[in-house]
Image 1: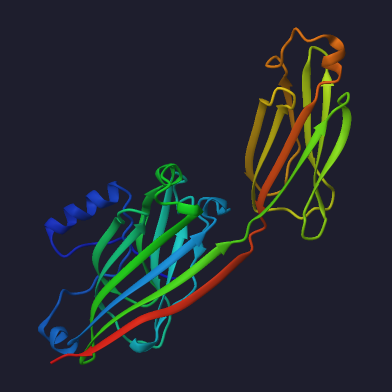
Image 2 (image 1 turned 135 degrees about the vertical axis):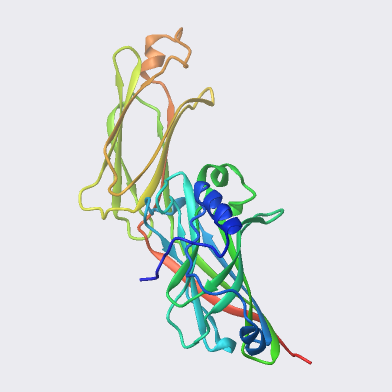
Length: 334
């Protein structure tokens, strides 16, 4: 398991900076090493610049709770002795639910490189990228580096610049000296798609609402998932009951929305929505029909036309992982 050590410093001034970062939740986890020396300068004459970019699709359906992580496909820099990395993202924080945590991990690989690296981790948006972490590190195999408070989850959810089409893109840029006689520039891209399925139905109640049970089924295999039953109660209240079907496999994360409309007046009576982890629960709601014209005769009330729509969106935790090496440039140094 990658090591995560609390960051120290080389000087009193740096210690002060590190303490401020810790107060802000900047969990920089590195291994200390001596600063640059003339020997290192002479040995690593080549320069490597490499960018790792990871896009997570359907990010709002990431089911991980606090302490659980998503891991990117492995980024392998073949031209640099197969130096390998992964990006680890905690959608609800490594320790604090209101934050998104992000770390870059150097995994076991064929490269014996251990040295100073300038690293920048950025969350990309439609407009300007937002750098959240930038540091010079002594990078070692099986070590992780990054931030526990990489992004505030509330800001990401409310800012469509970040979650454009429900995608979150994280970019890690590395600059370091390497034992070679050329300048190397490269980029690798990876994509993780959280597989999401959406099922829905619409039903028109054009007669007395008397407890008819409706079934919400998956289109892919016709497996029943949810039952929905409406019942008109005394006092012109509507009872809504949602309950899961027996034998349906648990989901990792879901959202559900039920809407009721007066079909004649084309007006919204109510809208119910909820989301949760794990097995679909039973839900009961009582809805007042006071928004409908109360002066209507009883006969019309008894034959009120309602349009009921139920939509369930869920993930079972299945991921589609793709990676692609791209844009490699090498130039021999003079």
